Length: 496
Ligand SMILES: NC(=O)c1ccc[n+]([C@@H]2O[C@H](COP(=O)([O-])OP(=O)(O)OC[C@H]3O[C@@H](n4cnc5c(N)ncnc54)[C@H](OP(=O)(O)O)[C@@H]3O)[C@@H](O)[C@H]2O)c1
Image (cartoon, rainbow, N blue to C red):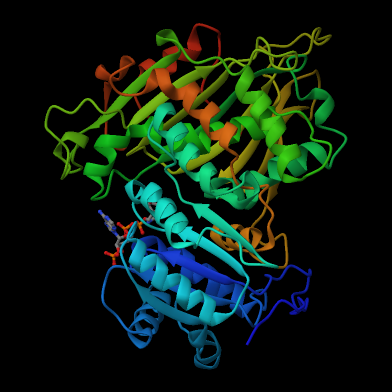
C-alpha cells in the first residue's frame, strides 16, 4: 500500500513523472473523461510518466461496478485512441476504481473520502469533468464531507474545467466559493489552449532567441492579427451555443490568452506566478472594446449547409453571434498605437488558427521601385500545419532592382523526433506535479471577463449580427474594420 515515504522514481526520459497520488474524476461517465482525460492518463501510463502507485477514481451518479467502469473506459480508449495493447491495459486497469454518488451530495462525497482513505494516498487531485453548474455544489460538498482538507503529509488540489463562470459576477462568485475551501496554489483553472505546443512556442520564440524581442513592439510592429477560424458549425451543441456565443466560447479564454502570450513582458522565470503576473498586466492594459471596435456575425444557410438558426436547439429568431472580429488596444509603453485585430468564427471556409505580426515598412527605401513596397510579416501557425513563417522582400534575379516576396518557413511536422502530446496530457501531468504555469489564476480569469463583458449578450451590440454565408470568410464588415487604417486580414493561403 502506498505511503508517505514513497519516493518518485524518475523513469521517464526527461524526469517528468507524476508523484504517487489519487486522481479523482467527477463525471467519469461523461464525454470529456472518455475523449480526453482517460486517454491522457493512458498515454502517461504508456510513457512511464504515471507513478506506479498512482490510482484513478471515477465518481458519478450512475450505478456501475469497477469492472463495468473498466470495460467502458477500455471501449472509450478503442474509440478515441485506437488499438489498446493488452499487456499495457492489464497493468492500467487495476488503477481504475469507481465510487457512485451525486455532485453536492455530502453522503456520496463522504463515501468517496472513505474510498480514498482506503487507497492510502495523502496526495489527492480532484477534477471537475461535470457541467459547470455543478462546480459550486461539488466544492461545498467537498468541504462538508472533509474531502477538501489536505491529508497529513500530502496535498489536495482541485482542477476546474472551463467555462469558469459566464460573466464577471458569476466568475467572482465561483472564485469566492472555491477560495473559501482552497488556497490559490491548490486551484488549477483549465484553459487547454495554453498547453498546446504552438501556444507555448510563442514564449520560446520570444524569450529564447535574441532576435525577436528588440523588434517586438510599436517601434517595428504595425498591427497584430489573431484568427481562429473553424469550418464546423455548432454540431449538435445548439442549446449550449445559444447561451455561450463566440465571445464566451473562445474570446474570453483562448483568444485573450493568445493576446497575453504575444503581448506580455518577459517574465523573470518561467514559473506560475511570474508568468501570470505578466499576463495580468497585459489584461490590465487591455481596453474594453467599444461598439466601433466590434463586428459580430452569424452564419446563414448556404446551399445544403444549414444556417445557425436552422440548427437543433437554436431559435429561428436567434441573434447569437457565431463570428466576431474585435479591434483591441493595449494601453502600455510597448503596444500603444498597435491594434490587435482578433477574429473567430464558425462555418468558415477553412480551419486556421494563426497569429500574424505585420511589421512597419522601412523609414526610407533607396530603390526606385515599380510597385509599392510590401511590409515584412511573421506568421505563427497554431493550427493546422503548426509552424512559423517569415515573409520578406528579396531582389529578383536580373538587371535593375525588382523585388519578389520570399519566405523562411519552419514546420513542426517531421522536424522533431516525437509528435507533440495532447494538451490534456501536459496539463494533467503538470497538475499532478504542482506546476500551475499553464493554468489560470483567479485575478486572470476575472480580468478576462472584465474585458469581454461589454460584448456579452444583452449588454452590448450582440443584437445585430451581420449574416455571412456558411463556408465563407465571414461578414464583409469585418474587412472594413481594418480598411480604415490601411490594414487587411492575412489570407492564410497566401505566401506573398
Ligand atoms: N467534452 C469536451 O470536449 C469538453 C471540452 C472542454 C471543456 N469541457 C467541460 O468539461 C465539463 C464536462 O464536459 P462533458 O462534455 O464531459 O459533460 P457531460 O458529458 O455532459 O457530463 C459529464 C457527466 O456529468 C454528469 N451530468 C451530466 N449532466 C448533469 C447535470 N445536469 N447535473 C449533474 N450531473 C450531470 C453525467 O454523469 P452521471 O449522470 O453519470 O453522474 C455526465 O456523464 C464541462 O464543464 C464542459 O464545459 C468539456
